[in-house]
Amino acid sequence: MSQQNNENNLPPVEWAISTEHVDYADAISFMEERVAAISRGDAGELIWLLEHPPLYTAGTSANKEDLTDPDRFPVFDAGRGGQFTYHGPGQRVAYVMLDIAKRGRDVRAFVHSLEEWIINTLGKLDVTAKRYDGRVGVWVDLPATPELPEASDKIAAIGVRLRKWVSFHGISLNVSPDLEHFTGIVPCGISDPAAGVTSLHKLGHPLKMEEVDTLLNTEFEKLFGKTTLISPPNFG
Image 1 (cartoon, rainbow, N blue to C red):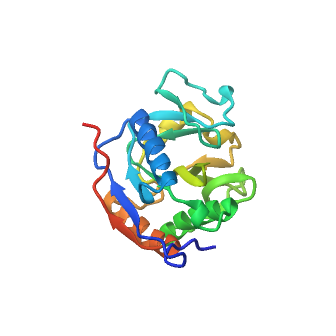
Image 2: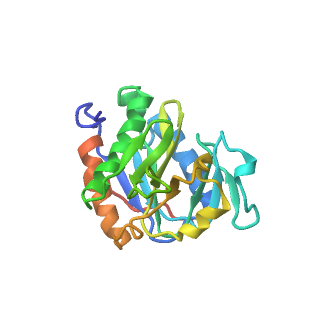
Image 3: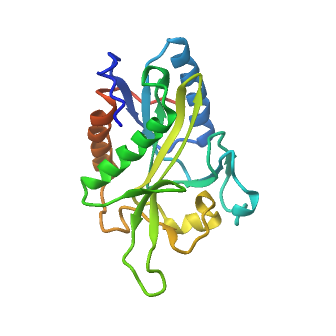
């Protein structure tokens, strides 16, 4: 389901890209302020692309037993839905601050569109990704083996929250992160050996982050409408 802004006569979505790693606490603080400003009508919608230094985040459904190496990286309460997630270099995080009240007020359709955004982006790289019932995020099937006839790896996570119908948090796409860093948690609470974690690099697509950003922008505009590039937040 498309949530295009041109159908609703909305202005272009602002699009910002941070080239330096952004501290998680700074990102959350900025999002809180921006979401409040969007709710008041004082700021436009925004997609913010960035990378974080290595860290773990806990969603509102996180089980503390799923944090298997609590001293490895900083751990943050994210305030979003979901369970434990890793963020770090080589992972493209897209924080999605959109006014869902002006986009149909359908949260299920909104999350579906976020998934479709990732799936379509990966499709441009000939990577077939899909949703799975009962699993949040976007997955890539693995070749069948006698031990695991049906297995899949997660390539992108989704965790959003709405405040006064404005979304924040968003998606994280594994471009070329150190996948060993995921071993300090049970990612998204799924311990099934048939459900692992992968990346574009592991799948044979060693892309630069700028190349991924271009694809994300193109596919975003097809689903949500036009964007306009702005300078990223400055925390200097």
